[in-house]
Length: 156
Image (cartoon, rainbow, N blue to C red; front, side, top):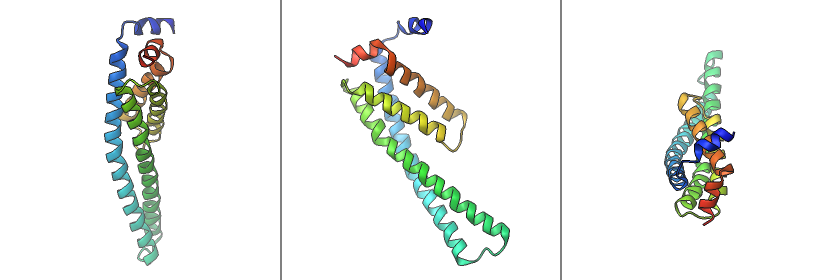
C-alpha cells in the first residue's frame, strides 16, 4: 500500500477532484437517458406481455413461456431504470459539490461513487464497459475515502 501512496504523491489533487466531478456529471447524463429508456421500454414490454397473456392469444406452452418472459424482462428493466434515475440526483449533487469545492463534497463523492459501483455490478450487460466503469469508480472511491491530499484540498 505504501508503494501505491508513493505513486499517487505526484498527482495534482485539484485535477483529480475536477476530473471526478466531470466523470460524475457524465454519469448523470448517461443515467438520465438510460433510466428513461429502460423505464419506458420495460413498462411497454411488461404491459404488452401482460395484455397478451390476459387476452388468451397464446394457448400453447411456448406462447405462455414467451409472454411470461416478456413480463419478467420488462419488470427487471423498470427496476433497473428506477435505479438509474435514483443515481442521477446522488451523482449530480456530488458533482456540483466537487465543482464548487465544498467540504461535504468528499463524503458525497464517496456515496455517489459507491452507488456507481453498485449500478455497474447490477447492470444487465455485465460487459467490459461495466467492469471498466466499476474499476474507475472504485479507484476514485479509494482516493476520496483515504487520500489526505484530497481531504486537505476539499477542506479549504
